[in-house]
Image 1 (cartoon, rainbow, N blue to C red):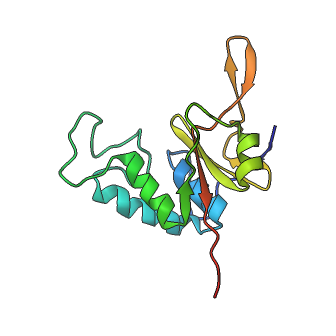
Image 2 (image 1 turned 90 degrees about the vertical axis):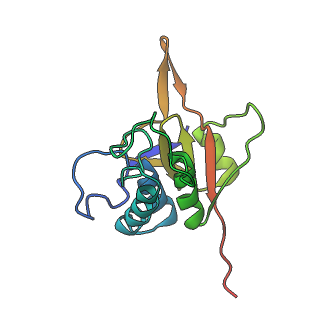
Image 3 (image 1 turned 135 degrees about the horizontal axis):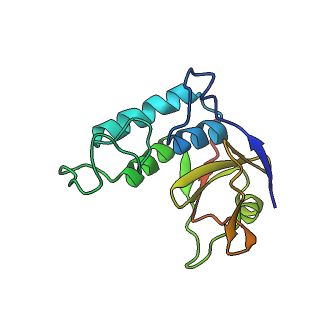
Length: 161
């Protein structure tokens, strides 16, 4: 199992307090080494253009309910988040059908990456889950199981030429 290290991605340093659904913003800031506020503003622009709350939280929208139809040309919240990840140089790994790697397996295969599960996204950097809470495991009946990723994002290497 991989390690865990508390990391808010620079959220507190940017002047934000409390908890909110900004896991995609935090994951990008942590994994890409970007400034939290810059990533937050990018996400806010993209989300607001598509009728969502600024934080990028696809599940806690204020300006629009889940059942309200999108206007023509608007993207789903998940697709908006995907576009922001792509803008920061990440690409989604095509996982084989039915395969969901544990966080440790994802790090072994892809190195530093961003992993997605149901309703949450987090960064794995230097062999540790870096997030505001330790989500490496979950309870299933009476046993504890290692959490598996439903999606994995890796950062494309940039070459200087």
